[in-house]
Image (cartoon, rainbow, N blue to C red; front, side, top):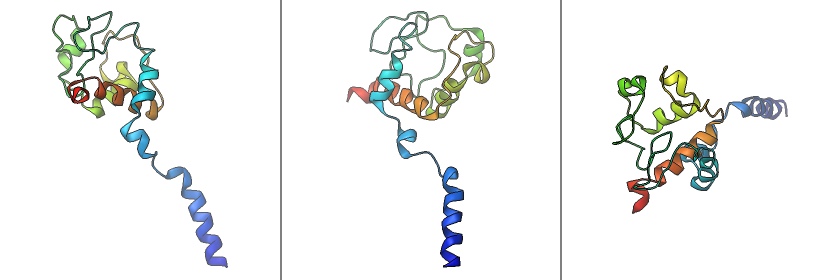
Amino acid sequence: MRRSAILALAVCALGPAWPEPVAAEGGDVEAGGRLWRGCVACHTAGRGEPHRAGPNLWGIVGAPAAAKAGYRYSRALAAAGLVWDEATLDAWLRSPRTLVPGNLMIHAGLARAEDRADIIAFLRANGPAGDR
């Protein structure tokens, strides 16, 4: 009995240390679409749609940063040499100013990892992979 009580306490103590659910890693496209509504004042994400205050983000996952034709990027972002892989997008969405000091994006960041994963899933679906 004593051994099982110790095991139960150990499991309870480790509970908060378990990693986030897999859903947060892969992201939810529909949830990302709902979150995306907060981005549409500055961005578009459809193929061929025009830039707004921010660039069109169609096909951004895997693309080099500051490379969309017809959009004028900040010097800081253009000089950063980033590629928008999922880890870089996650860091950008968490805190654009921390990742690239001096960039012009006005968004302060998303604190929740799940929200960032959902936005990334939405962006991944709005690109060449999502067209298949």
